[in-house]
Length: 261
Length: 261
Image (cartoon, rainbow over all chains, first blue to last red; front, side, top):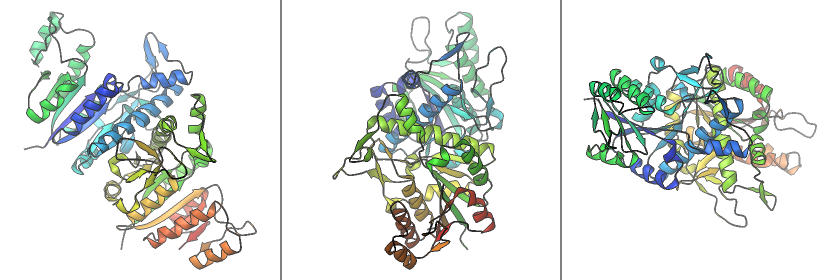
């Protein structure tokens, strides 16, 4: 039987809240088995930018990563947030190792090509090129990788990269050698139905129905599309759930969120 | 025969200079064999602090790492500098992995105890507790560790830590399993004599003479004390030299700096 690995993505709003973060990290440190954490950015980058008088650059409502913004996100994501997570997890006896996609070229990527919009220093992950070898080596050395949402362009520049995409890419690449669960933790209890109740499980057919009925909308659709794509590529299951339910899911196999399979 | 590892420390004034840095990284990427890079901080942290209106806190002429300064050095050393070095080395086909002493608890440390001065969040390395196991695993996986001058206090906080000390600690810990050369690269050609000529080799006896004659003074004495301490603890040789001589030393065994042994 293949060994299990839980790939957990935690969003910026947990990172931003000291109390929620402390509670999440305690739970995370107590999860049984192999695990990887991918963290989002949070508001700190915006605050530091403001402090330095750097304005967020927007084109057609999209955020652009120009040279100055790249410096900020590299500092904040790979430095401040990533290393504070590592130090806090180390204090909880979790042997964390903080990395970006550039380190050991873990997550191959390239600068997003300019089409209608030039997003600047934004990375598109090259999923097919990620072999997961180094992450496997680290997991086998009993380390817990903590990944910041950054990659590099193979030409000397860091790239701002979507944390959800990094999570699914890592999950797919590790599914060659492990039984992988991909878990998106956020501030809601899961995918909600028309009456704000959690839908405990979604299959592909059910997802089509939910979309048709307009129950699942906007922001959730790409998340679920990604989830099904990950399943198609070998990931065992994907969960979308509240961070509070994480420990119960992994240590006691009790799902309080939404399971996609 | 034991495999050789070169532990190279590069100072802030090379980090600060784009041209010198590019030349150094090209040379570093072309060094044969296993290697580890430890980098200093440079002026960027001071510039970012100024930009954010944070003043350097000094007590009795010593720099204090208060909470705000800790955030800055964590961002700049572990984020901006470390990841830019990694991205640049990756572009030069050197499989760099950027870490701090907190990651995988590579370099055990504690907060410096308050005596006459409270240095704040400054780390004192616990050399005897460092086993070098993770670094060996990374080196054996054909990775090149790039270490930022930060450790952690085992209680959830990062600590600002002297890069020279990190370099000698890493060198000593790896000398159990490897033949280790420790190389301090800086902007001078080596340890200079009374006529500003490089002294090619210094033994313990000769060092005592040089001190007595007042030829080696001030800043160089602790560097040399550290060098001899490292040799006593198993490091094969220590070099203090100009960054430009690095490639010739390692690839061609031609020493243009000062060898301590």
